[in-house]
Amino acid sequence: MEVEHALKKAIMVEKEAMKRYMEYAKATKNVSGKNMFLTLALDEWNHMSILEKQLDSISGRNIWYSAEISKSEIELLVPKLKETRTKSNQESGLTDIEALSTALREERKANEYYLKQAGLMTDPGAKKMYLRLAEMEEAHYQILEAELDGIKGTGFWLGIPEFTMD
Image (cartoon, one colour):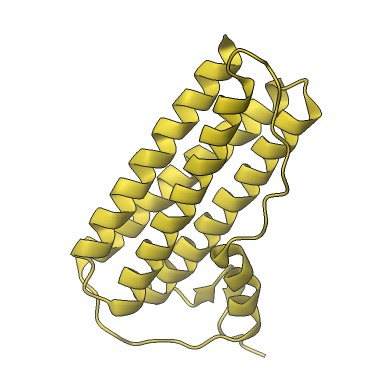
């Protein structure tokens, strides 16, 4: 069954992301970066749990488990970061930048995968679940991008210029 295959693939992707974020947390020197990666790992574990529950629900019965997926800590944090910007000038190594860059690429791929799966689903519950997971991956992307911008000193924070020439 294609739906089961897609769910199994998504579960595998979430497990790999969780593992990668734990490795990044271990390797990251910056405390806020370390905490961010741990929070992302927990979010990926939650995504994996949602997908496993769906797989169990449809296996043999083809019934989608429909539950509201509440906002994650990352999603709740992103709007707050846009409102209040505090910059840390802590030094960070190249390893942190590489980890963030890799994580950004992986979050974008996960987002695109979930959007594609949502487009393939005919069941409204399945479509809703995949769209919700895509939203969560987008929030991960935004928090990673903000952290990377802060480390690189690009002058942007969540896509907002830190200063203007006015």
